[in-house]
Image (cartoon, rainbow, N blue to C red; front, side, top):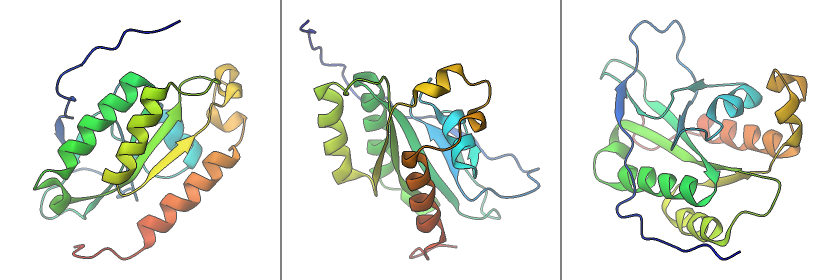
Length: 175
């Protein structure tokens, strides 16, 4: 079945939200969804560190530590379009000065191969984002009440290691 393509206009930017001042501990990373249903909550739980910040850029006050962000999208046309908007927004002057974006995680939207438009956009985003990781479809998550019940797949283990190493690496200009 051939799907008609439309030009969606400008890719959507993410809103900004202040980080709550009453945090007891500062997370090593803020997981941010580029769109609803990206899988942020499940991914953050499976990786085992960081906080799900919803669908907004976390903005810290000058007295807070630097924020470390990982964006999450589905490997679908709509998901990668939303990721394009978020990455374009981050690349504009200003955001990179107040946070460290470590990359984008594209979570497969089904057990089938992603559509060509999604893979083409992810290829483009590899040139714009600091890093792009792919996480394959995990069928067992559909029947799990808690993501920890199924354990971490090899994709999740590799993602956990890669992001942890990026967070621990010294950053130029980091406060």
